Image 1 (cartoon, rainbow, N blue to C red):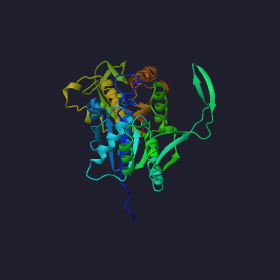
Image 2 (cartoon, rainbow, N blue to C red):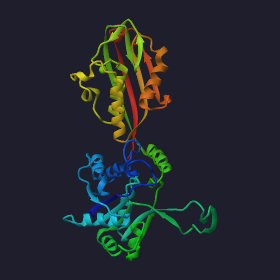
Image 3 (tube, protein in one colour):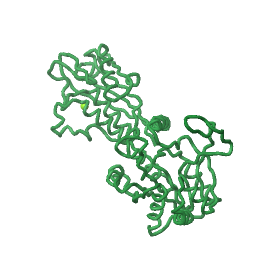
Image 4 (spheres, rainbow, N blue to C red):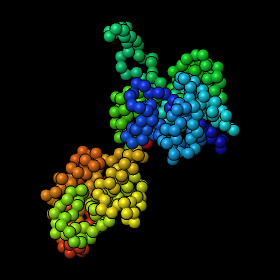
Length: 388
Ligand code: MG
């Protein structure tokens, strides 16, 4: 069996993203909880065909880069230059400075955070016959010249495609092409490869590779990310006993009752179950790990703190909450009259439309500890989509 090629990914994140707005370049700004840069780096770091990941950023973004990649320690950052072309060359030089050069380099824009699952292997297969390869899409719109707000001559689109990234090359030839073409401006690396006489192949492009340029693109990428997500489900269960008191708090709603629920926090059993469900869906343990009862800062705390933290933890890994469902198990108090208030409260806390939040209740037909009114139990489930 021949050895598989060694493949370096070179992620370009040196642009200033001035058309996008905001205080950080677009590739560092949150996109459904994880920046395009983070999504892109995770994608390539997790690709079984990729052996090393390099990233080029502006030198003044080194701190932001480090903060966004604390869990991706093997990615090597290099400083960029004044143009994308110069930044790519500097990235290639950083790769060349490593003890062993890779066989292949994939050059990719961090502003294209969704890379289809089979794209890397498709490009590598194309390199068995060619020096370079890139995905490209046919042009769907009618093309024409334009000047002064008026259309000019139509341009035949039948022979045109739009080039995307990642663009794949044998490492030595593309490094040589970049070194030789520093005075020849080009907007991508296929252009330089062609200038150097390399043979380049088209592989089928994808709408998923859409580039984040304007605020409109952000909405489109968010829609694509929602659609592409991996669905994960978590469940939660909690019980609190009754003690002396005059109200209970369920899903953040205060309900007058002849007894209270006993607990370290406000004992909102329903919100605790829901917090556990969200933590479960994102593989983040349970509420006791994050908010130990031994920690006095949670004494009497409003349980919305726990729920909001779990939702923030989900957002931080790029998980998008899809729906939650809570079941409160008790004889009394009657939940029905408060159900819509509970639903509205959870929807507001979780930033979900109310139709994606369900609160229901059941008795246990007077059986067991809930039937004897010794306490209240709650179950919850949460569905998240975790974008790639
Ligand atoms: Mg609890």
